Image (cartoon, rainbow, N blue to C red; front, top):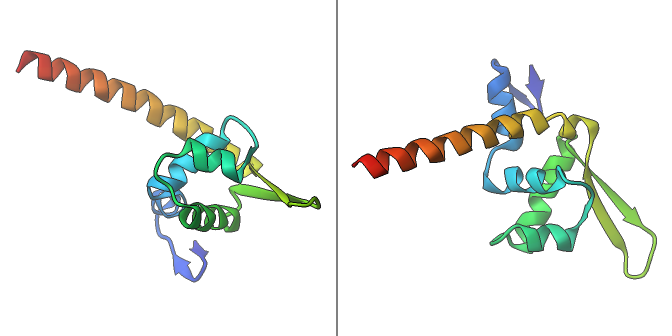
Length: 114
């Protein structure tokens, strides 16, 4: 498959490219619970700058995972939500969450034994 001028030989490689990085995963996690305004996302994701949040949201939008809606108000109100395709990542997030919980329990038990 080819996307944005790059050939992908493995679907996993493509998924990693689309959602890789600390910020994209956290943005997607926040949007799993519903539509959010830019300021809500920025408050919810500790350490992300306005510039980085804008950049990551644009990349997620170009990938078809996030939609942006601009309301014709003064000042303009902008909301972000997952597309249907973006929402389909929920099962991946659920699996990552379960694995993370399991990992934390395993590490805790190993540390208690040591």
